[in-house]
Length: 89
Image (tube, rainbow, N blue to C red; front, side, top):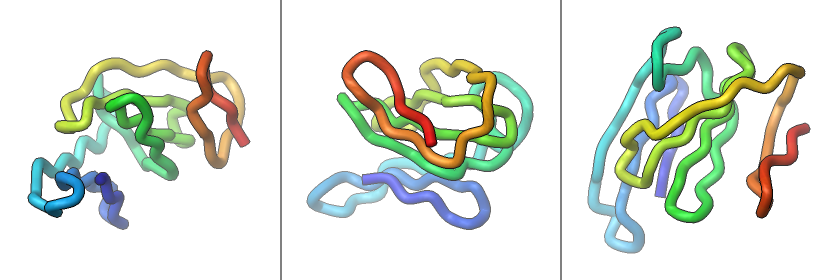
């Protein structure tokens, strides 16, 4: 289970025990960093974060280790993961 707080920190907990796993707060413009996460989706043991300020989707594993990211070229408020990509609002 993952939680996003107002300080742009992301918290990971084990389900169903609730045991704390890790906390990240990678605010910035570098590799694996974000400015302002607005939405997140957990799918296939990967956590996807939507950063509309940089128009980036970042991918982390369930232990909050950074995996990859990609940029999209349009404004987006929210998103979901589908079988072959993403749908953006």
